[in-house]
Length: 140
Image (tube, rainbow, N blue to C red; front, side, top):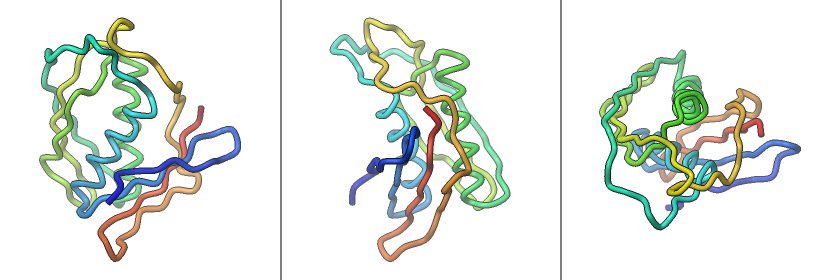
């Protein structure tokens, strides 16, 4: 099963994310966001610090938006790059994730796309035959 794929959207970036379970959907969403934002350089280190984030939402779709917004804030607001993401708890209205993060360093990371925000426009999260599928659009 593919983890994600991008789709064209006028002046924005659209992303479809897949997972066999809700845990995998959220984990794949984190990696998809990271892959759209950055390319890792050859000098990438194994250092990093642990960070736990907890997000809540009205439903699974709202939870996904809040999670992606938190990850985008870690990068845009705090200058932190995610190195590892483990979903510790995934309920309908609450998500707890263990991250390993490191400071952005232009010798180790190359920005591919500048994302401004995660939007509710076109948002969809649904259970499908092979697991879960989400559709999210990002402002660029």
